[in-house]
Image (tube, rainbow, N blue to C red; front, top):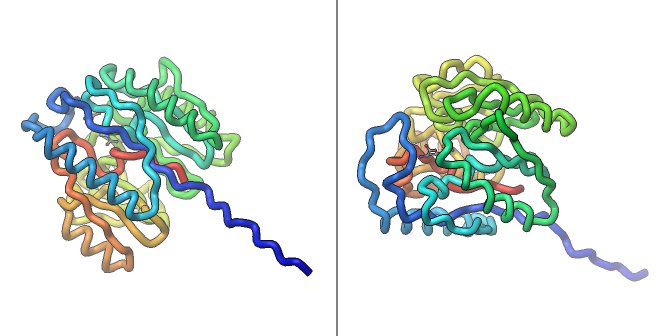
Length: 264
Ligand code: CIR
């Protein structure tokens, strides 16, 4: 007989990214004192961040630049992905709401995605949304209100996700305090969390900058270069750890997760 080999069609692993604005010094700050940002260095760090994603097999899709929207580089806050459902957010900070329009265009350009959105009076920042399997932890932070959490719960119920609200008073976003390893273990800084008992498996990390990891695959992690002890700890658990210097974005309360949105 004739053997025919169908090409293996894997869905593309896309990372949405957005080039830094030219007014980074006007970015929102909640918990940190303002320190001057080196714009050229920020641009270079962003290039390296994108290059690291590409090197790990991700295709970057750029959201149209918004040179005047100071926080637009932190694209994670504007859309949250659940399989093929993209939920556009309504950012808690007024100054960030205009970011969503171009993100919507970018999301709609990826044909396999369906699109929903959080609506007023709900507010929700993607940085507050932590997925662990089919449980979605959502930080009730200064940016994300109860109505935003309620709307997300309603949008996700038909998709089999359970939404769990998490009180957040000590850090900007839930993911400024905790993220998840590919095996579902939540890692974080207990000093930045109101509660840790909600997570079935919780592992404290030794540095505040170490709380944020991006799962590049089941076995590799992207982390900030500012957390070498955490990197060593996670390497010790068997992960391959890729580090990037994002110091200019850390001055603006950004972390390694918030610079991209992974569409798996
Ligand atoms: C803000 O305050 O909105 C930005 N300066 C930082 C946002 C960081 N985003 C995140 O952690 N998901």
